[in-house]
Length: 345
Image (cartoon, rainbow, N blue to C red; front, side, top):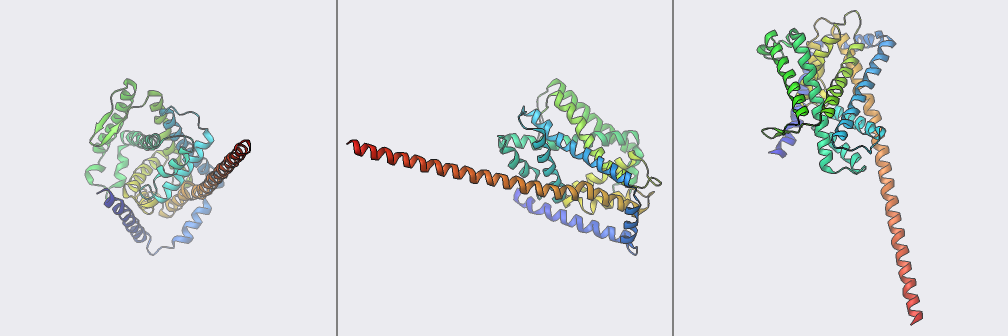
């Protein structure tokens, strides 16, 4: 069954991309998309491009913090921040673009962290805790948005079942999300036994780790949403809290679709949930997001992977040459010893 799902999920993701692109085509049919979006991109002031860049750095710094938190949980402190940052940056830059189901971040982390002495089990725990930190941040921010401004879920009316988009249900969902976070913190503080739900096993980390998770998870999402917020025009900007709520909903839908990089799905949900902002301006902001958060990091990540693998290959070749030289030296010593023995005889 597992092998069947490995083939089915990529197909589901591809279908989601095709369907979303078709829906976007219908949305913009008959419009001169290219010139209009290009004009909106040029209209974004350099200052706001700079702020979007800083938001990107904040998001990727938080992602590096994910790995650091997981290593603290594992009591691993001998790995430098520079190595952790490069490993985390490469992992997320690749998985964000290619899709977690096609290219798991565990593969990059395994190659990197085994070189630092971590076992496969430790790396599996690290990957799981990083994923949970992201999920915890999403639940926390989503709970706050739905509790404080439950009417935001109405923006997805027609995209979600009606029962989920009314104010009362939205606030209930928000309270449930916040209650989950509170229970997780209590479980961590009291060091309760692992929570097992079906095949899911939740190990409560130490409270100092949990506090870091509650900071790092939201920081990454705030930075990512900030890219779009700064790329939107000031005149029609609905405010950061609205952009954050729409971002969380769209990003969750993109992840659920299994589409590589959320391509098409993320854009469709975001545009439909922002009816008060001209569509071309929203599309331009989303292109800035893809450029800053996905494409530019991907280019750097490919360079990092090439340099890392080149270094590893060089180390393997050097070790092989040293081993060969050691064997040759040992062999010559044995021959000399044998010759000496024969002479003495």
